[in-house]
Length: 125
Image (cartoon, rainbow, N blue to C red):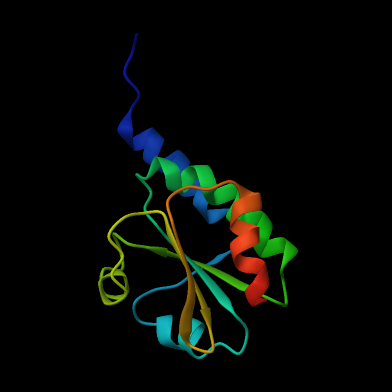
């Protein structure tokens, strides 16, 4: 058995994350994109190496499409943007924070099926 080439795996993961309906957010634009947003914002804190993050990515993408106009969905790569995750006490990924009016109104830690995610998000949109 030939071991998988880590470079190919990383490239495949990067490609999958770039196809998302959710926009990337950074430490620099977090305030403008999330805190000051007039609509609720679901922030997916993730990393390319995170298996559970990849597991929930399709559900996050579907939620983004289904709630377009009512909910903004963004993804923050914690490896590339360490400041905001520290500010909000993110200790494990995936972690989803739902912001409404600039405040965290819901926190979801770990992988969960889409119906469970929707049940936690829906009351706020």
